[in-house]
Structures are given as C-alpha cells and as structure tokens.
Image (cartoon, rainbow over all chains, first blue to last red; front, side, top):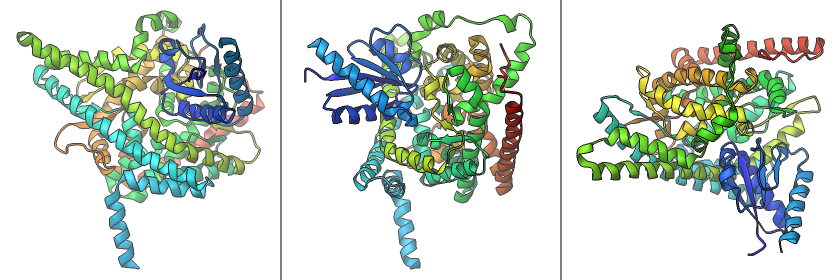
Length: 101
Length: 465
C-alpha cells in the first residue's frame, strides 16, 4: 500500500527490547487505523538503515543528527508514560501522511 | 497412579524443548492471567522459535567446525571450542530442565526480596531470566541434580538484583535513566573488575589522564558494529587462516568466500530466530510485569531492564568496536585458550557497558577493563566448554558428540557462571549455600551504605571525575 509507514525500531540487540516496542507500535497503530511496518535493528545499524523509514524509535541513545524524526523511550518497557509515547508516534506518522501525499 | 506418572515422565522426556516448553509457557501465561488465545499463540511461537534456532545452529556449527579444524591442521593451533553466540545460550537455557521453572522461580525470588526490603529492583526483564536458567542448566550438567540447578538459578536471580541495586545510582546518573536498574548477569559481571582496575589506573600518572575520542573510533571501526559485515569480515579472516594455500588459489578463494558469506548469514539469521522466541515471551513478560507490579507496593523501586538500553551510548559503542580486534588477537595468543570467537563478537557491548559509569565513560579505561575481563573469560569458557556442550545436548540441540565443543561470551565468559558451577560441582548444596550467603552479605553491606548515603544527602560517589 502506498501510505504504509515504516518505523525503524532500534535497541542493543535487535532481539529483545526492540521486539517489545515493535509489537506495541504495530498493535496500537493498527488499532488507530494507521498502516505501519516495523523493522528492527541494532542501534549501530541505524545510520545505514535510516533511509526510507518514516520514524526511528529506540530504547537506547541514538546517534545525533539523524535525517529522520527519532524518539528514544523506555515507556514500552516500563509501562510508565506509554500512552503519551503512542500518541506522539501516531502524531508523527499521521502528520507525515498529510504532508507527503 | 504410579504407572500414569511413569508414563507421563516418559512422554515428557521424549518431547524436548520444542513441545514441552510451549506447554509450560501456555500454563504459566494462563496462571499469570493472560487470555487463552494469547497464551496458546505464545507457547506455539516459542516451539517454532526453537526449531528455527536449531536450524541456524546446525548451519553455523557445520561451518565453524570445518574452519576450526582447518585452522588446527593449517597452523597447529588448537581452537576447538566454538563460540555459537548468546542467542544459542538463551535457547539452551530456556530449553533446559531448569528453563521450565525459571520464570516462576525468579518472580518468587524477586517478590520475596522486594517485600523483605532486600532489594529495590523490580526485574520486569523476563526475557533475561535465561541467564539464571543458563547457570542452573550448567549446574544440572555438572551434578545431575535438577533441584540443585533450580536452587542455583534462584540464587542467580538474587545476584542479578543485588548487582542491579549496587549499580543503580551510577547507571541512572551516567546513562540518564531515572528509576531504572540493570539486573543483567552478562553485564553486571564486569562491575567488580571495573572498580578494581579503575582504582589501579587512578594511581598511574600519565595513563589516568588519557581518553579516546568516540567520534574517530566510530568513524574508523563503525562497520564492525554491523553484525552482517562483522560476520563477513571475521568469516573471511578465519577462512584465510584456515584454508590458506597459495598453491591452489581457486579452491582457497572459494572456501574463504563461502565461509565469509555463511558466517554473515549466521550473524543475521541467529538473532532473527531468537527474536521469534522473544515474541512468544512477550505475553508472559507483560503478564508477569503486571503481576509483580501489583504486589510490589508503593515504596521507591527501580525498574530492572535489559542492558540493551545502554548499548547506544557512544562510550559503550566505541570501546566495543576496539575490543573486537583485541578479542581476536587474545584468542590467538592466550596460552591454554581453546576458544575461537565468532557470533558473540557482536555481544561485546553488553559485556562492557556497565564499566562505563564506573570510569565515567573513559573509552581507554573501558578497553583496558574489557581486555582484562575478556582474558579471564577465555579461561572460564575453556574450562566450562564440556558442560556447556552437554547442556546444549540435554536441551535437544544437535551437536555431534565427538566433535568440537561449544561456548559463547554470554554466559560462558562470565566469572559468575564459573564460580557457581565450580562451587556446586565441588561442594553440592553447601556450594549453593555459600553462594546464597555471599549474596546475602553483599545485600546487607549495600543496604548499610545506602543508609549512609541517605544520611549524607546523596553525594554522588563517582570514583573518577
């Protein structure tokens, strides 16, 4: 689909914490009718994978000056402040949809 | 009734991790309050993950054994303990007899220690319970006693919480993560070594004033941070050492390049397979978090998370990039070492991340501390290799019994694993008791110092500023 949004989810391994985040984002965004695809990677891979994604979400510090919007958050792991982060992500993704199309 | 139980035991023994663990996971998920559909999906996902992991381990093991053998014949250096990576360890641990018990056991230990005020950490990182189960599974391999393995794992759960509490203030300050601690055995193991080595460096004029620039390191060595490229490069290097034969260039080139691409494949595929395991665990981990948070009360607690959240820090990245070539040199020159590193060259950031708050992010010091800890690790891993391999076989992984042995940095390189296995193997339950008492002493001393801290108004006590 043309309006599919791609979220790059990064953590230390691309295995554990990023899977929790990616699953949460997929669930919550599809509940809001936002068509989203998540890709997981190690934080050291972000610079080479960042092209072609709409948003980067990470559980660990990201390199500065990424060319895309980026969020570093632990909310999906601790459960604290989770709803605000989801709203923020939804906002970025839908805002972009309006701008791009 | 007895006949039924014997029959049941036969079925259970024959099923193995791919069927038994899913069943257990479904039960635990239901007990913790997950919905039936979600619980079943979680269980089946975990069974599928095990089949995937076994496939990739097979691919990796065939390739690495060939290379290790070729290196031995070509150079006369014996490196017959192959590093199959922490994802394999996690699968071995969750697939072991201890792994079936670890989730309830670690949760009970955490709740009891929280209620008695012995810890401030609420460990919601259910995924990393595998470290505790891993130590337990080696104990079972060493002693043949499942209860002793479970008891050791329970102590490991307490050890993880102790180190998490101990490092909490520094981690929170250095990494800017309020309310978080890291009960991650692979990461906390470096804390005492880092403190000791840092104390020595502080007393060496010249050395104590040097730091390295993280930007330059990341620019020069950045590709080593990408597992696929790392796998390719390491594969080609190992291939060149093993298959070096200028008299037959075409064959050598084919073998070297094939090794490179196969090992690159492993680096990509192994984490993907383990990710499936993680996906299966998410409903459990969500349910467990709610379950424990409800019972933890309102006092000040740290949320215990995976050290994956620390790995993006420039100091952690830079130091691990430098430690990759250092580790390769170490494995060649260390006398008596039998380990050849591969998959876990990618896990070095986890191995050293908690040194960063101790040395205030000084990359050179992290590299020195990392080198010392890795050196120690090579000997722990060499010594534990037989048990590691045996544990893998017990968990249903296909390892040819007469060939190479296996290990991994996570957690074969961890001194905590070695000490625990050594004590229980030599002393049995007395060994478990000694571990428990040492942990309890640590907890009491820590509690005292925290009281002092509170009295002196929380002056941050960083050793190097």
